[in-house]
Amino acid sequence: MLSKLLFGSSRRVLAAAVLLAATLALPTPLAGLDNARHTYLIYDGGDPVVIEGTATESADYDGLTVRPSRSPAIGDAQLMLEEGRTVVLLHGQDRLEETARSETVDHLLRRVKLTPAEDEMVVLDLTGEDVVISLTRQWSHTWEKVTPTTYTTERVANPALTKGKENVKQEGQDGEYVETFLNVYEDGKLDHTEFVSRSEDTAVPEIIEYGTASTYVASSDRIAQVVPNEDGEGGYLVFTSGATMAYTGVDTFNATAYDIHGITATGYPTEMGVVAVDPRVIPYGTRMFIQSKTGSWVYGMAVARDCGGAIKGKIIDLWFPDYETCCKWGRRDITVYFLG
Image (tube, rainbow, N blue to C red):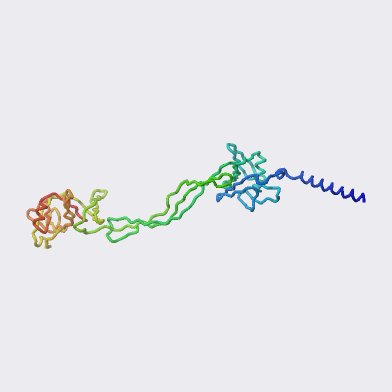
């Protein structure tokens, strides 16, 4: 009976000794760890991943492997660095460069004697060739939002294109614009987002030219703009109606008025727009737009179809339907635009 008691006591002593020896044999990094030692923020170019304490899921990154803890005694996340990978450590103004062993991030920090303060995160930037680990209270990164856009259509007047016709000058293309934002993290949490910039819209507008070139305008129409050609030879007239007319030249004449009803020298009946000219200066059939030199009186569209004994040189006789209007016109200088 005594021998059995001694044997049982010896077995208990032996078991206790084995347990003590096993405890003393644990690797130093795994001994005496508290839960949630660090707050980790992992950034690989996408949305940052925050790990506080142990990881709940496995994940593989370039240069880093994340695994849940294998034991309740190991409360910190098991962030295993790729052996042989260059690791740059940043803490304030300090910069260290190490070659990773087969070790966790926590083990590396303790190996190089870097201890994050209570309000500091351990940020792992995996976007470059090296793994960059920063111990910092605040960390930020930029991200972009791409918004697709649909091209617009612009209509542009073409004074050289016949009125009523259209032409696609430029094909439209859909595009996009990019907005850049800055996310600022503190204590492992997104603190705020700042707008940084917005790019130009890359959409290419569709440009449709519509013709405004006319051969005739109403008597009530007026010249709104005269656009000469770059070489000074001719140009085009822009009217208040939006119509345009090309002109080949412009000159100043002296104008009289007549109201004789009948047939002109070229066989056409007299009417508004029929004028008498010196055919040696202005050939018959020449189309013109006439207004007083000051622009206060507009005769409008005219065609050279008549002549007269007193019409010599730079004199034009304008036909009006009645004597009263002729008297109002009297004699005055006019600007003549010769139409193309």
